[in-house]
Image 1 (spheres, rainbow, N blue to C red):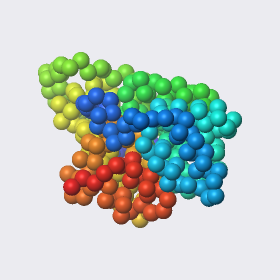
Image 2 (image 1 turned 180 degrees about the horizontal axis):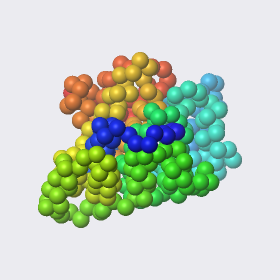
Image 3 (image 1 turned 90 degrees about the horizontal axis):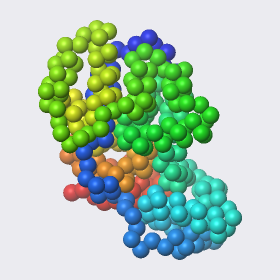
Image 4 (image 1 turned 30 degrees about the vertical axis):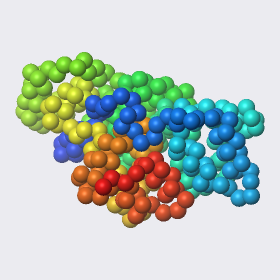
Length: 313
């Protein structure tokens, strides 16, 4: 990331902080996702189908997409293990050899455990250009505490370095303070009760903060308060709207930003993609499905549309 400036402009600081969607209130796990546990799941049949898809005459991309975009991440892990036992070959490596381009990237991301996927994206962000700042913030701010802890553990295991050490070496100033605070995972848990007095105190403190004290006030509030508290203080977007904005921006570029599309659709398809779709349609007047259909080309289109699932009228 190589952010070396002493401090970020207050307007940019506020923009970043005010976009932290921070795991807002949702229904039970998976109920707002587009991809759910496949009820008629047969690990043997799926492993066999994938084997046929890559060993027959020509690669059957549609079969690969159909299996992997209709199984939960847990089921995909079971398929990988069954494939390994059946063939003595690694499923990821076998599919990687059979595919290419963005479809290969999607399939690799679908087969990775969540924490491994997040750790790789975080590492890439911290070692990339300044434009990857929001990726690091997205991962550190929108994962639940257990997800974040697992991601940071995998990060250390895979790259032989603590994420906080990379944050310290690659960033500085208010951005560094923000990322380090998020990486500590010290956010309050939501107890079901809103402390409206504290919310009002935070609002007033944020409004009064000026100059150097502005960052000193913003960072603790945004990295320690629970999501419901921050929403009541009316200073953050809800998580689905945050991701809807990011998807829209990725689709507006001359060439769609496939890295953003892949990361968000895969990381949110089992949690709140239905809510993201609703926010997207409400704000931009066009469904996410149609937008993907118009902008995305090539073999990966069917996979991304399958993760999105359906049109919103």
